[in-house]
Length: 357
Ligand SMILES: Nc1ncnc2c1ncn2[C@@H]1O[C@H](COP(=O)(O)OP(=O)(O)OP(=O)(O)O)[C@@H](O)[C@H]1O
Ligand SMILES: [Mg+2]
Image 1 (cartoon, rainbow, N blue to C red):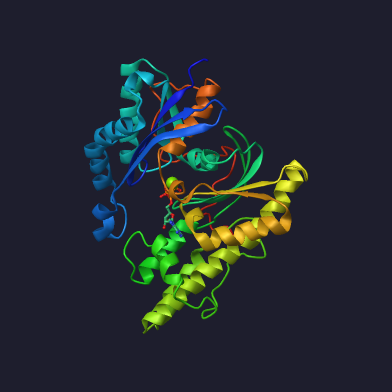
Image 2: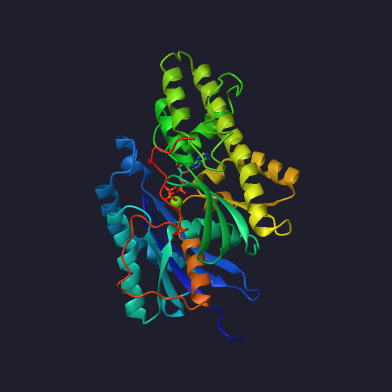
């Protein structure tokens, strides 16, 4: 039997230093051999957000140790690696450069192909780490820096159907958390606090909910929360606001996904109806439940990555690397770090454009 490819994945686009090894199994499915993620939360907590210089320094200090751990846990050695895949963008350039250059150096020393991966493509493919999904599919990418509906037609083939015109969904969670006095990163904490609150207590706005197709907007929601927090006195009111915010996010994503379903069906017909939800916010159980319910109503197959692979990790980067490796899509060592790198290269930049509906 021919040797199955082993891919090393490296991720350092923001505040997670991550290295993973995956191998294709005999059924052609990816198998995670190791997946090490080192978070820098403790470093950035006191600043209330990611400080690029500190993040880059931490990546430099950690990356070789994390890589060694990934090899130790995987049971494979350096010479078993068939290609090295590293995130090249989008992200913080000083952070991207660390993983990208580490990956290039390893590829050169092993005399193996180098593959530059778009971090967002890693998120887009991440549900394939635990389930078989064929193209085309509709993707809702809800992460810390992006919120988009995309028609995924194949590897590297994306058509954007809608995007946020201001904040990303994860950003809305983090900013709301900050207004509620929750430590960075607050998104996951909102989910915990919301369990103790009444989601009907506050009536929050749902910007552009009945217009703008499946484009999204969350900035008005944040402004409303800022106004309410000024009058909040009790812990229970804080829990109620967390619950009301989460419920509103659920409803916005539910209704906008419904619009995106229609657009996806217009493009692909009524046969292949797969809805993939990925990115850090896809870890939110209430949002998962509500979008699963929508899929049942609309006869779409719902697919989410495992909770621990929703946030940044290198297994998804290795997976994108594996798909590119199988198509012999290798990159030159001159491939640059790209702070901005859209999945749909033809999509126009809407964020902050002052787009009005
Ligand atoms: N359980 C949760 N509920 C809501 N939001 C969450 C949850 N867990 C994580 N998040 C949010 O997900 C975001 C992090 O996701 P991710 O790591 O995919 O983003 P990123 O890598 O910073 O951005 P991008 O992928 O767009 O470059 C944060 O904004 C975080 O608050
Ligand atoms: Mg991410």
